[in-house]
Amino acid sequence: MEGEITIKLRQISEYDINLLVEWFNDKEGTRYMEDPVDIYTAEYLRERINKESYDFIATLDDKPIGFCSIYNLKDRTGEISILIGNKETRGKGYGEEMLKELCNYGFRIYRLKELFASVDERNIASLRAFHHLGFNEITEQNGFVLLKREESSIKYTREIIKSYSNI
Image (tube, one colour):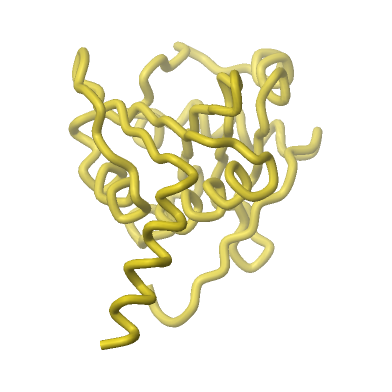
């Protein structure tokens, strides 16, 4: 990644459905998903998206590069996931930037207290990104690592950064 990267999130619209169908049916891009469907259809995605969740298209320079979601919302907690759909943007660090924006939405805009994620243990890049953003491993089960980040960890991170700047 060169320079400052600005990933923006926007709500999904009907115009995104065909792109999402393409992304979710890409076996390489979805190989680490916990519960992949054999074939994603426009109808399936229309029904699933925005039902008790916050779903977004991630953009880079106004170009769609991925999908991300906050779901399983209960008692000010939520689960998050991302998918880098655009093949040209995989492996370039954009996933971590998407996660950063998604956490910002979860904690600052939706006022959640905890975020969880379930990551395939083979997805080293994703695990690294979650760790960089303050997520801690809770447990491993069936080849997936359950991670958690509390809203207070943002304050903790700021305190650490502040203490280093005083040295």
